[in-house]
Image 1 (tube, rainbow, N blue to C red):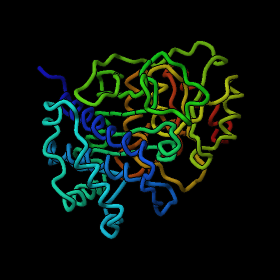
Image 2 (cartoon, helix red, strand yellow):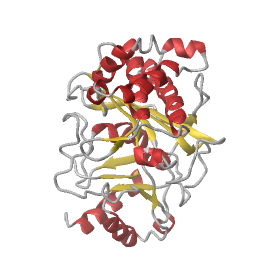
Image 3 (spheres, rainbow, N blue to C red):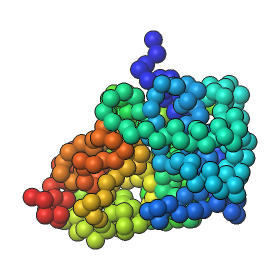
Length: 355
């Protein structure tokens, strides 16, 4: 008997793997078609193309499911110069394994279908039914600088994360490789890099090399046991606008952590601590009004929890993915091994004045 969500997991991993082929191709092209969104964050032809490929696979295999995705087609409808290269990328990107490619379904038919597929990601989300969340390139600035980025895909059921997949083309395949200080920049998809993290609720977390055909063999991952806080390491965002770095430094000092923080983009941070390359991930609020997007955390949240960690906001509450397209009821993120999460949370609340 197949395990629960086995098909969803297989399709999700293959869809992410195929989309990663596209993002890597875009990275190696001189012109990445970069434009700015309303919030001044960058988006590339890779974001649009990867999202289209992932949604096409979900549409073919799970046509009744809703989708919450970051990008939409409005800009492409009025911009031929942006639309045409994206269509070319989507049309030409395929897995090298024919059987795996067939599993993903019919793909995108033409330019008009491309626009329709992109707009299938406009669901409001919510607490009922099956909802997929997609961030086609999480950490676009990291992607552009050759640092860390992730293709993030998760399945929510009645507001709870059931399946999570992260494709991280620039992380080392080796789960034992420690986080280097320079991992946030000038990392390319060279040999020995590229990993898929995945998890199914109640079934643990796995890593496997990111390939170009069928899925490679995976192995279980677990968070590292932290016995001495002085030797622990923590990850945070590269951009100071994404997380309060000065408060994070105070928290590290109070915890007795002596290593400098490792700054890297995207949910690659979740994957890194899940396999024990790092220990703690802090994302501290920089604004009282900012709401995190569900696609920025859903996959990583499940992968860390299934690897033996705990993920909460700064108030100690679980992340609530059933509110809508944002984590409207949460503030900040703390991810750490379950045994030390309580201590980290206590210090975070002291520094932020929440106690």
